[in-house]
Length: 317
Ligand code: CP
Image 1 (cartoon, helix red, strand yellow):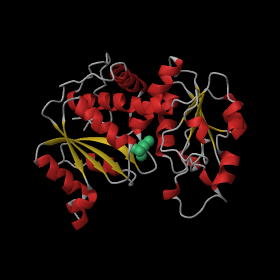
Image 2 (cartoon, helix red, strand yellow):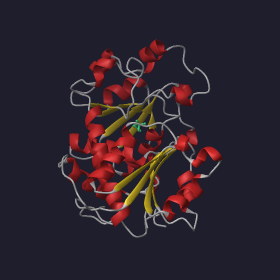
Image 3 (cartoon, helix red, strand yellow):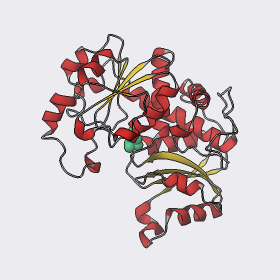
């Protein structure tokens, strides 16, 4: 039994194997498989989502699985049923895998410690610390653009403190040999002790001009305890990817964003679909990565993956 809890648990070889497995599907965007034919997967999203929710569903259907979409508001969670009891209930019906998005840091780790729960758990974004499939799809996109991740300079810019994408990348990218820079306003800086020693804090100018990958992060207004900057326009001018800043990027540098994006806040709307932007290819890769992850957790193998994950994996139950 296996899970995908976070990039913190993955080593380089395991990440490479998933990227390899995902690249197989990325090259076959219309291919359907019956690998998970007749098997049940439930998607439980306790926070809003468009990309992750639908790309998991597309991935599950392309692998032939039966898909159940949990709606918190129409469920017995409104009567106080816990997520543990919800999962035990689904498991009793024959659901094998739960794809979970939650606002609670560490919830999935708590769930896999429950000895009576025998489902595969896949993290679809948890609190402010982990969004492993977003991180993997970003890495796949970078690899497709540059041929590899080793030596790549990646600048992650913006609302770092509230970003689970940034947190997952700070664990994963250095393992792949990439150099990670972070930049943003002091009010959005991560807690010092959460920044790995390999990650550098830099000024905006250095981030923009020296990076191969400029990854802008959404200003997560819904997680802010008040207005943390004077105005959207002010934020855009000081910390956004303006047209002027984008003109200072390296010639072959790319623009990434996990989305949803606030046009005119962290990124100029014209840059979203510019030649340098790979924002929509990132979305496409989300399906491929999620297919590879589901294959791996539910079958132990990946059609396109030559490597096997190691049995010593911390994710193993
Ligand atoms: N990037 C991302 O997680 O988007 P959603 O919130 O729409 O899933």
